[in-house]
Image (cartoon, rainbow, N blue to C red):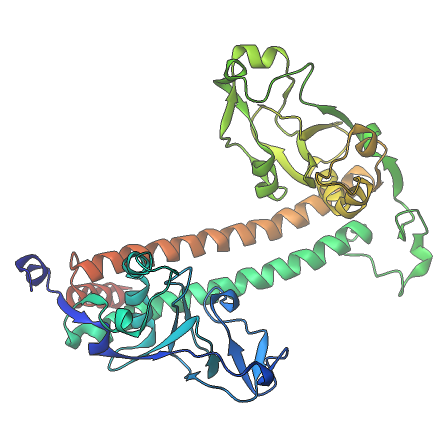
Length: 424
């Protein structure tokens, strides 16, 4: 063992020192069924891996090889090194191996093995078909603090993992609530008492039929072209690959950046236009709704700073008598209608003649404002939890790096945490 490793308080192990490796094997195809609830759920390879736990699509009536609950599942065929945790017993195919810890918790074992995925891929790339075998796994070199500290290290990791999983569950719940709330807000609206109107099935007398379905009687249908100035971001031809038009100081948002915003405000950009580029382009002001019209149809973003657009993005500058957020939500709701207008070709696209006549169901401005406020409140909760999740993941990554390289010792870290806890 090198002096550097010893000085860091780390010990060197091979995977076989601390775990049993069980290689997968393909079962007889006659006993594989397209139902994971028949027989034993069957995993062919990492195609069935989820974020943490597998998501099986098949079942096996006569398993050849099994893993046990809490085993670490690792992909042994391209791409080598992907990790999941077995949340139950599975039948495993030859694309996977199960790693069963001996004296080490699954959470710690999984993290340590995952950190060596690059080393495994290097081994795999030396073969004709990218893969690793049982010996490659068993001889995998690992660095860990002394065994006496493993339970404490696992305690730290489990605490962070619990926070991560709980936050992920909150985010998933908020997203589901958001989808339901959006549908209700844009079809039922909010009455004078600040409450959602009852659905049409319960109170048909307060609704009316329209080309968009049942809408509150107080609402009107208006084309987007009368609600906003809808224009392309280019006056004349701007060559896409001509460097003279790009690379200046003027923000230029890309289609993918609009799609990634998912309706939110954007102030970041990956491209700019030059002085020559803006001579043939239109600048859109803060608050403009950016709408994609090619490939991804009707993805939206709201500008947080003035920007220029490519051909594949249209800007809707909303008249002041309307609420920008409400109009953006209404456009997003019309995504399926707009997608249906796109020609069924290799590259889907729509144009201004599709957008400007788009009918939106619109209430009076105070109700638009109330709907926008209700949406933003939920979105702020979702944003807060998403930020917390990113923070937990960053803390875990940094902490693991410190602990598993010896930069920070486990025992002093726990003592510090206990001291902080006792002072609260």
